[in-house]
Length: 72
Image 1 (tube, helix red, strand yellow):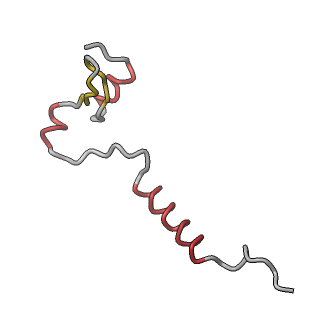
Image 2 (cartoon, rainbow, N blue to C red):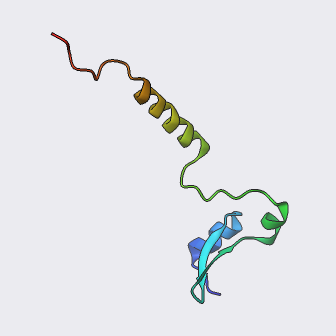
Image 3 (cartoon, rainbow, N blue to C red):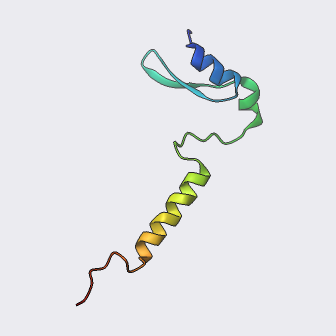
């Protein structure tokens, strides 16, 4: 299997790399990382980003009254 330099760097850094082999989507992961049994996160969002988004959403749902039309 041929990997790009970027994919090789990712694997050396302990990251999972998605590849396609014969039409099947696979994940390449260093053996020591796999054997640790840690849960892998494929999410494009970090926990901190999700927390910030949740807080922003809550603020929008509660509303601060500034977006309501003036009653005159």
